[in-house]
Length: 220
Image (cartoon, rainbow, N blue to C red; front, side, top):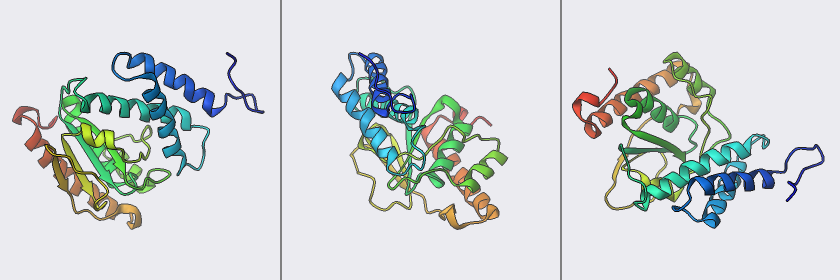
């Protein structure tokens, strides 16, 4: 079947998304049905498109987002074992606090935990000040983007940490829920964002100390 192309000769989003769904369906063969995979791919694209200012780069981001959601789905069903604890960080726009928490957790814990972040009302992009203060700490956020909160990632998490998003996160039994009271960095200068970053690091260090064996809590 010939792929659909637009007037500029580029593959249409639908064609690219169908191909992404085929790749993911092959990857998750025996775990998730093809119809479910395709639905998750197109849902992911639609969700990201709601806030995107430029849509040309959305299909690969949608595939990445859909892949993570499908992993979460298989984990929540018990089809794929979790090798390490799963932490989900949630704030309103997934452009500041939750991104910082996820990035700092990855830096401190490496592959000892698996981290996701999401927003109840995701923004179009990350806050420049957040990107800047994490670069100062040696953390690169160039591959990150705001993602909407979905039920599958909540179900897969062992610990769910909220930051100013109220009751947006659904509650499920057997999970640990924490709420960190942190200032929204969107209206702060760089010194203010640095202070929030340092507060988040202290919270993350405490959480990792509780979740991980003492010898592996951080890379320090």
